[in-house]
Every structure is written in C-alpha cells, then in structure tokens.
Amino acid sequence: MNDSNKLELLEIKPPLELENGDGSSTMWWLLILLLAAGSVLLIWALYKPAQPTPGPKPNEIAQKKLREVWALLGTPSLFIEATADILRVYLEERFDVQAPERTTEEFLMELNQMPQMTGEQKELLAQFLRYCDFPKFARLDPTEEECRQLHTVAVKIVDETAPTLPGSIPPRVEPPRMKS
Image (tube, rainbow, N blue to C red; front, side):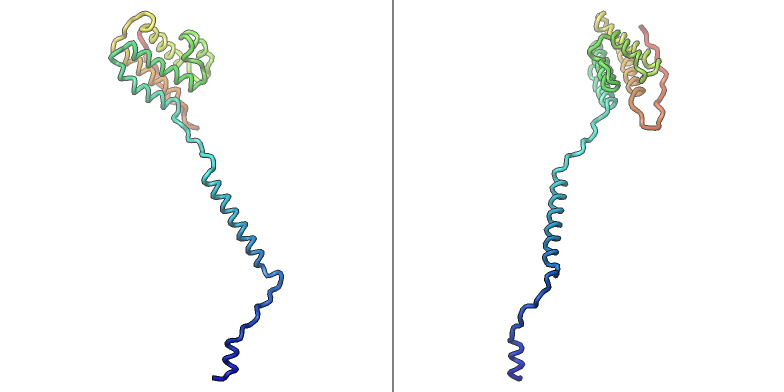
C-alpha cells in the first residue's frame, strides 16, 4: 500500500460549512412547540372537569321507594303515610311544587293550576291524598287490601306523570275509583 493512501485515510477533513438558513434551529423550535402542545393536551386530559353524570330521575327514585315501602305493610298507618310522603316528594321534584310542606287542601288548590296533569290524574291524586289523611287524623287503620289499592294508585300516578321520551305519547290509564 502506498503511503499517500494511508495519509488520505488518516487526514481529518474540516467540518462542512452550513448556510445560515439550514433549518436546524427551526427543527428545535418545532420540537419544543410539539412538546409544549403535547404537555398541554396531557394536562387537559388528566385534569379536565368531569362531565356530571345524570342521576336517577324523580320517577325512578319514587318507584324504588314505593317498592321498598312494602316492608311497612304490617303497620298500615305507617305504610300509608310513607306512601303518601313518597308521592308528595316525587310531585315536588317532578313539577317544582311545594307538596310536602302543605296541607292536602293547599296542595290540591295549587295542583288545580298545574297544566302538566290531566283532570283525571288530579282527581285520582285528590282522592288518594284525602284517603291517606284518614289514618293520620281519624286514627283509622286501613285494611291490607286498602293499603294495596293506595299503593297501586301511587304507582300509577308516578307512571302516568313520569317524563316521556321526546316524540312518545304518555300512557293513559283509567284511574280506579276509591272508596271514601
């Protein structure tokens, strides 16, 4: 091998001269920008406010409580009072009325002004509430059959007045006649 060839291999070449507009500084700025954007997206994804999940609807809560109230069937006066309270609280939440704090007559007067319920529903509710007042004020214990009828009426009122899906027609149920 020739000595000149060896020197060519050993010679170090000077660094290449780059022009000022080579883009290396642009690449660094682009990398920094991408890292910053990624950090912002990561922080937003981790700490974004959680979307509130809708809770159960008033009719769902009322139906659940009406199923639970069966445990009180052995004490008719408590059963009827609890059933009436469940229905009053449901109506308050559903129609934004002050049902639990009012007397039956005060509530029924306000109820007559509510367009959300049909005349039959209002009449059925009036019969229901007046009948529920008997054990409370007249100290009369209803029979188990009367308790079951009142419970059925409460369930029907909740079912009939529950919000419907857009475009659907609410069910129409013929109310049963209650004994006074």
